[in-house]
Length: 243
Length: 243
Image (cartoon, rainbow over all chains, first blue to last red; front, side, top):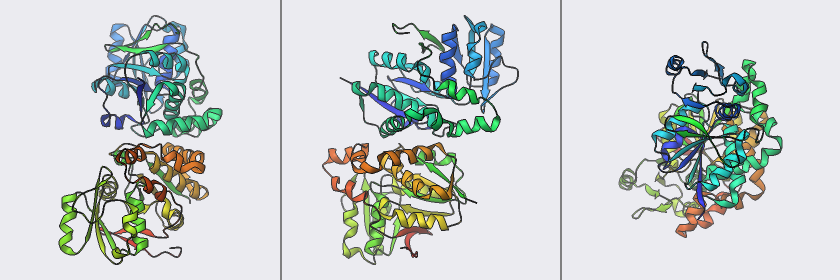
């Protein structure tokens, strides 16, 4: 029987869904889940998502690198912010990272609290690896868009649409958000960067004169053949046949 | 200066937005706001949205017709449910109606509680009249999709996209939900009924063997040149130059 897939357009709507026993794919294209994929490609050992910058900085004492972003800006005093370029640094290989971001880490925590069976991370950078893995794991699936402060955003929705488009023949979709995400991706995929640059978050980067290169970087397809998966409190890189 | 427009994809997200002083367009295409437009076209005097069927039935004593729907079905003991065909009956002319539905009346109540300046009702049936009026009223605009039990639905989002498409040159849009609604409408407008029949609510009608004709009815363009507007606790039909 085909697995069912649902799209949740923001974490604010997740409590409306039955999460228990499902696999949740957390999506924060600009930039948390893209950066996590880059980090594992670079060879990070494990990533600990934490809720607050204060909590994050505690882990300095335990030889973690500490990464903290709020409102699209790296917080002072931390090793890294949330830009994927920072996670390409070869010095982070084999290190552990504590990571807190405006939207992504919150979505991860919430998925865990609501009883998900598995939590993995999706981005355009690991699209194929993710989709392959989703097909072969046993659970129904929730694609959870991290959004922006509980509002819906374009880029996360488009990625949910990319996953649905790829899995189409092997899943059951009874979810209007999923139909919408799929249609949006189909109609925007040939001009993805142009469209995403119109989004509120890309406009936020532009206003800050920051992270504008990150937009293009985070829309690359399949440049990081990794699957970050949560084990206990940490994300590790799942060794898959395709990864 | 152009007015700003925002799209709220479900009432569950409305508390994230500044509602005070704005004009809210409540959208429940299948079927509350479509039926309200039909009712005013038929010549209803005023419509009172109420929260519960129990409250609704109290108004029988005051010579109201009472309309109540839950989960796409007319409740027993009421004069009407939520089908637009019921509101075409000439016997309802000049009558007052108390009306409660699964999603639409809740969205109306919430818009009022959050301090909106004006509340009007939109449907494909009154699209042009609505858009004309929106251009000439003074406030910034929220298009509030009633959704289904706080989840996002396709048909309400598509209507929000139709409004944005029509007002495009005269509004400011900094809202990803609005970009998404616009793009969805543009890419689906030539096969609107086919697409909406894939939606979860149309599928719900199909499973109930009910209201299937309502889908086609509610997607007609500009068949009811009325603008239902809230005055106090009631909706009345605004007399506009175009209506």
